[in-house]
Length: 207
Image 1 (cartoon, rainbow, N blue to C red):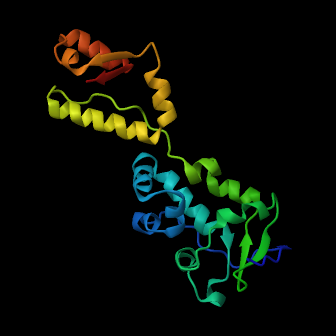
Image 2 (image 1 turned 135 degrees about the horizontal axis):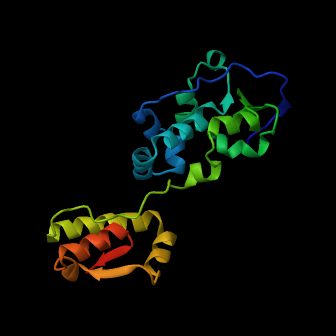
Image 3 (image 1 turned 90 degrees about the vertical axis):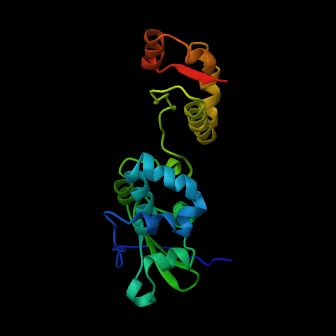
């Protein structure tokens, strides 16, 4: 059982470095981030909103401080080897003052204040940051040709989106105002009508 010794700190201890721009391999391979987001989702976050991924890393590595010199471990070792997950201690964080506790009976951790955390999060919601993907638009038809290969690629993009946002996909497919058009029909439409459909962005191409 983890022994926690709480102390409201007047001043913070030596701080972990805040990484202004951290290499993707450092973030993507981190065990604590992988605990909350699978590698495939980490890759998608990097593609959709790289700043979000950086903020996620800053949360796990810099929303607290500890004495790296005294402990002889780096922040990466604290997360990857000691398995320190700061999100498990959010209930201890205070709004306007740091809080100190002992991790694994040997490492003194100082949680930064809630106010400092909000600055670190840069407007992102913590719960969404930990468990959700950033929003991305529903896939559109982008090819200038209309082959079966193009259609398969479109379907793969649609299903990939549906897996990431299942509730939004159900809502989207049940929308009576959205045009459902078969690929067979779509590829035989005249250019004017097809361009109109694509321009309106309110369609789903189906088998």
